[in-house]
Image 1 (cartoon, rainbow, N blue to C red):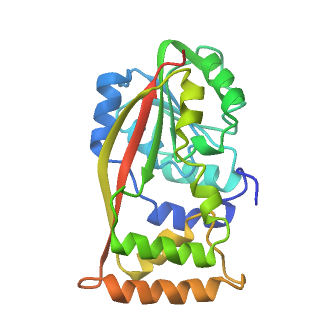
Image 2 (cartoon, one colour; image 1 turned 180 degrees about the vertical axis):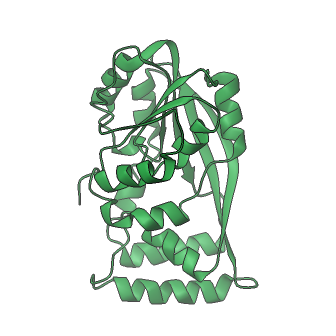
Amino acid sequence: MLSSTERFSSRVENYIKYRPSYPPAVLELLRVKCVLAATSSVADVGSGTGILTELLLETGAAVFAVEPNREMREAAERLLNDYGRFRSVHGTAEETTLPTASVDLITASQAFHWFDVQKARRELARILKPGGRVVLIWNERPLEAMPFLDDYEALLRRHAAEYDQVTSRRVDEPKIREFFGRSPEVAIFPNRQTFDFAGLEGRLMSSSYAPEPGHPEYEPMIAGLRDLFERYHRAGKVVFPYRTLVYFGRLD
């Protein structure tokens, strides 16, 4: 497997175009329960191309987008340069480079599963102001059986050797409890994307486990994706549902 800081280097444009954002209810939760305000300083750790970063900036907060991958970091700089309170930081969850007690809120969206839990806990506790909060966010598939998503996952298991290994690491609740020092609060919100075939292909290719052109599984995977789309589309579109999971609290 590629290292966590290299996995998305070749997937930046698909990531920008086809990865889901987060529901407005997430930002409202951060305002009500997680000290987010226009006066806040936020560290968005593992910020990628800036999907969550931009939502945070739109609240007026100052946001330090901490991202180790050069290609993703540079994409965020290009996209978010007009926000006056945006700061791009070459760092990791384990070594953010930010000053001690410098931020009110720490967010990590689609990123915590790549962290070293204990090293990240020490570092993020260091940069957090007293009374600050930490928020971990993922867009995950719904729990209930859905024929389209079931067949999509079967396709990935046939052609993407790393799929189970990567996805099994994502929402690891024992590691989340270890990180917070207790069970954090949890909120769940519905989310969705609607794709034509090009969008569905782009969404797949934004995933770090998907075989890329030149890999022997790439062509069979795309052929299988086309067959999947033809079976499930309605008026040229398929719906890709998610449940947005939000874990939040203090670092005890």
